[in-house]
Image (cartoon, rainbow, N blue to C red):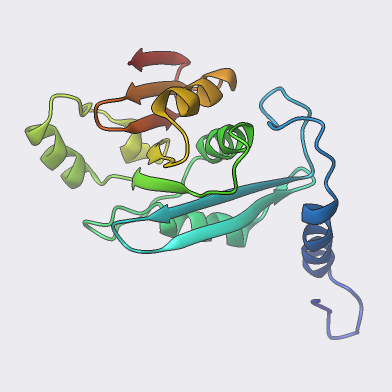
Length: 189
């Protein structure tokens, strides 16, 4: 635990100790949180990237407060792997990802296909596919394309749609779901 130079438990140390015990003891009133469903005590994001080989499993919110160090870790993880550029990810999108994951009732991490995209990367992808938006929310740190091997596109999209918090794109042929914190809307099959 973290203590100050006077031997007093610091707030960060107390939150860390709380997080360690809360994970095991948290009640399960609902699988979702925050987005209108019985807010929980903690929020957690679990993902891995096939592009970089990196994994993230972090508690980023405890008792109504975001943890800056965890958000910095998420920002780095969600970076544009082509340019190594990162942006401050919108916490609303992180919450949608985490709430949807919790609704899916699995410990398996998401596979991140696309998080932040630099304008250069977005332009390159747009030149190769008409499905890439000119003003993509990926460039604002407000969108992610994910896959969960143990769940179908339909299951993942239903979980995201139930959050009623942003856009959900179903890409069944490519086996991924787009989640963003823009206007509430649904597209694809």
